[in-house]
Length: 158
Image 1 (cartoon, rainbow, N blue to C red):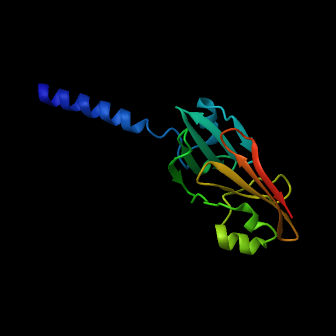
Image 2: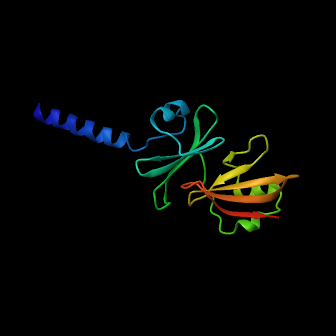
Image 3: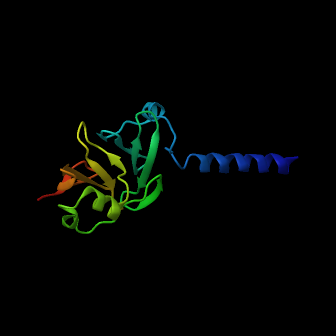
């Protein structure tokens, strides 16, 4: 009987430790997240949180989390759900390309952060947000924003 009680206690401790690992998941309601955590950065459907020392980026549809990425403080991606992070070295190569060409190179945008205008955006593998301003279906400006600080780190226009 003692062995069973010890086993059940150990299993309960292990289960509770493992279940607390992921603080946010795809499909979770935004309102329940906001009851526990406050975003330090919000850009339309993208919200950034600092939870347990890590940085969490969520993309929502207004009600639930659709995509997310978790980064360590040294910008290592710990996990993603619903998206493939973008690796980019030279943002200038994407200036003046068509929207179709952009989508062909990078895939479907992770989000549209525009407010009335289309501004396709992608989260990079080093926790930056790559945003594209369009005119006549062509990229006319690219803004790279640090998702840890919210600061613009690079901007190019054609």
